[in-house]
Image 1 (cartoon, rainbow, N blue to C red):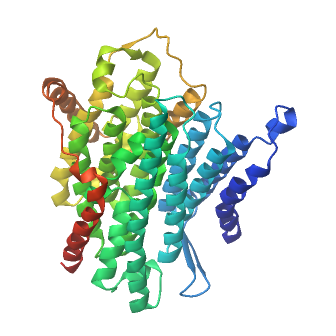
Image 2: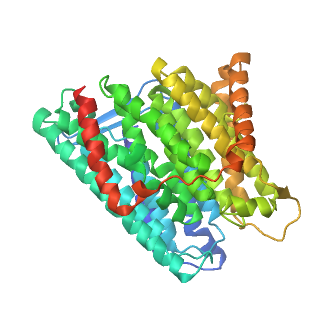
Image 3: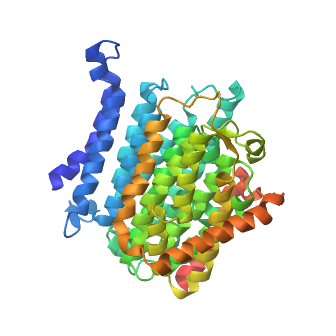
Length: 495
């Protein structure tokens, strides 16, 4: 199995860099060698690998070289995240199939896919550092990728470049903290393996956690995320919210399951970020910013119950990618404008299905994910996470209650429906993974929360005009926020 794992890890990088050499032609042999087809095949291989992991009776583990070497662990937790990466990347490739994207775009998308996969099986600090840095570079290049969809004036492209540079700076700063923490761990334990964090210095744990919390878009250290995700191209936003942030969240889930001392810290930040993200999302008037804030919130749900974080991550990845792709097909990003201009009914249906799932409606995987999460909370988390669930229902009522009409002159991109249907079908199929959730008590509670959320939205939130402060999102404050978070983490680890 080790050989197949190495080939699976290497395949995206081999294909990503090789497609530059493939001839582009309208002739039959040129279409067979289409770089889009190769990119799609890579995602299919990842799907197959995830399915194999689900069937393994015990985790697969490899220790290469010695304490300086590479430690890999592949288990059912990895499988959930790898499957998420495969489905979301496949959907983005289908979405871009007829959009005229260049070879550069597909190369970066596949390199990103491979590096995210690597992060999901790394079990040592240095290999994870390398994977996260490659993810940061590939994401930067995708954000800065020249727009080819005709959206906005030329200045929009300059703004995308600034957002990309902002992301790269924050990402590299976070990883500098992480690297210092890894060095301190090795100095004390002479090992980079995750197990070496047991008994590591307080400052090492604080630095490592700060880097991962920032990369994962968690709590106030993740407030770089809303602007970055909302200002990127639609397929890039889907990739970032669907899989990229999970590369920072996955190690936190793994560490929480491995180390008893880290579990409560991860749960505290899970509950805190779930509430913070949803508080912003409820009052946000921009569709993409609302979805981005909800990515912050939903990462909190993944961390709040690490035992079932993999299934919740899969559900969130499918939902958020479908929502970002659907939001990109709307005539405006402003909810006010959308209430005055009916949207096409088919797009509205896609938005409703995805919104139902993330709100916890039965018959979709979001229902099982929320039930599992709520059943694995500690007593002190219950109130906070139920409030966050109510806020989720309130937020997505904005999409559900949009006016819609069957006739419209607006045409969607040729690849829109194959991509969205793949993601929505995933939500239906994944629903069977936890069929035990379908008891009367489990069904009534989510339906009651959703109904209450819709009522609050219609009677209160829809009538309010509240603009929450964005000062912490400003570039000059992002690094300062990291410093504050570092002091908070010192206190939590010491406690």
